Length: 345
Image 1 (cartoon, rainbow, N blue to C red):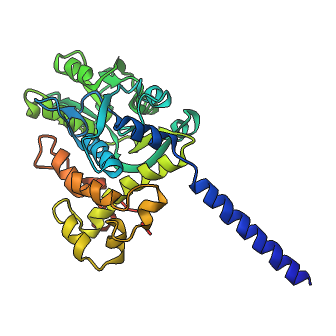
Image 2 (spheres, rainbow, N blue to C red):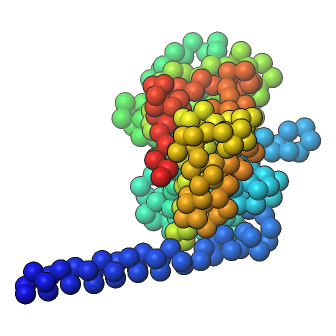
Image 3 (cartoon, one colour):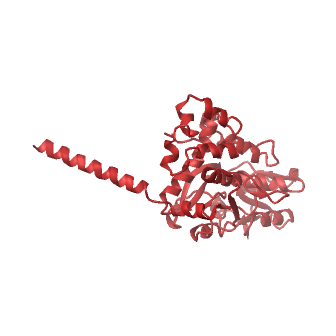
């Protein structure tokens, strides 16, 4: 009798949990509903960093972050043009997201514990791994950061780089003079004009700034790295379905590279592949799209629009571009990097 009672109680508990899970899954996403109602994704990007987000000569936003915005729009609308780029400074980006001005940030934003736990925001999946560095004039004679005693260093307000720089120089008991700017282009101009001896920020952004200098060879990025700077999308807390969409969209772009699915071959792979993982990814079987309330072809549409992660990286900041940044830790885990797509099943 006791065993029967316990079994009955367990069955009731399981049914309750299943019902709760189903109810949770049916909660609408206010963010997704708002995006669909306005007909466009409002995507927060930087104010202009080559390789990540920078308008070209025609005013079209180019770069890794810009294309991730387009890919997310394609996943939602099957149209990568249905995105509004909202350029935000480092000091205003999180306020703009929290107030609802933008739906998501793809904006070179480091994932940290305090940002995740105190701002009312959530960071999503890491899509770029970086580290803090310093750039100096090539003829400065400086070969390591410890040599910059008393140096004037350009920094960007509202970034983790302010704290990283202060922490490092304090740890080696060396004085420096910070000069803080709101935007990267302002700091770059000050560096070029000689107002600063060095510029301290993430190495990828230093490479981007170097590529836009009149004579890039006049500048060198020192080899030392002083922090972990994993970039991830940020969204507002309290919208689980929107979190799932942004998380698994980012994952799908990485998964596509792991599976060898490209913008050019996605259509053929969708028609002919017998690999169950590829068929799920490209929406031949509908369960992934159904689970996040999107069309079964959501990932297929995104991959056709922007390509897989490797294509995206090489097009925006790879060694054939002016930024010429080796993939390094942003290689797939199977190639010695840190990128790893969670199982999409």
